[in-house]
Image (cartoon, rainbow, N blue to C red; front, top):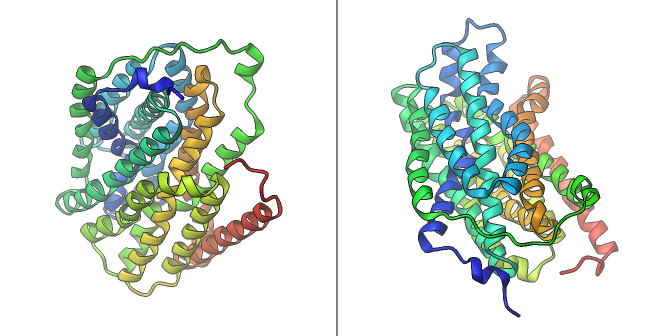
Length: 393
């Protein structure tokens, strides 16, 4: 059977450019995580600074969640390439602007601008990949995309930690890498022709319940996972760790994320989408239980390695699931909903978890979150066994 994507196969430089854009997205907000303790001290005189400093990290995620649906419409109606170029340019400008601001409200504004950029980049990249490939090649490249996104955390978070030891504002210069990617995008990317059947208005306005279910799952999983960059810096500070150590430790969640993403295509050949999701959530639950009971930094790292493996599997799995559900003319819109779910979970994470942290402490918050994820995975496994054979493998 001839693959439609064969006629759209991109050049090596185009593929490399899309993969280079991936690390700019998932860890965009977390780059300033090692600076959070210092930021709390700098803005201690600002009312509500303890929460607002955490929001400086996650307001980016809220902006992504709000803007991603609009990016999906632009991707479908205007094109993937213009959306990607605009996002890369805004990313460089708004990201580095954080270095120059002098108060917390200004910082929050620049972080919101960064969120608009990330929503555009993620939507454009995902839709380009699903335009280029189908079937096993799509699964393989989506896994590779997530591996590069996780690899960005391995590189950028320790670098941010080192820069934060010099000046808490220094990590903002990392965002300038987007300008380099933009130059390669201008040279290498062309807009794929998307000749597909028209979609009726009823189909255009209605999303199947299974698609909405994927969005909700992405939100919940990300809400739990984002405890790593928002809560761990303060847990590690209690262990006497400085910014460099904090950056390296938080990056631990992305090391195994690379391994999980690279293993995803092979695993998808053997297991159903539901089974992979269940396994991924179970890994995250186990990792968070290890962190909650940790007495040393090494034990925290061990928990992050386990949890990160789960994230590396679940993100490309959900992406592929939606790509299978989406009509070609709706890909931008459908895949942008996943971006919204992921980053709304990031934004809500400190708001939902903070009352728990204040009530029982950071360690116990990780323990109870881990128990909840493990219980959810167990319930999903039971339901899957009961309905065995109904899901197409």
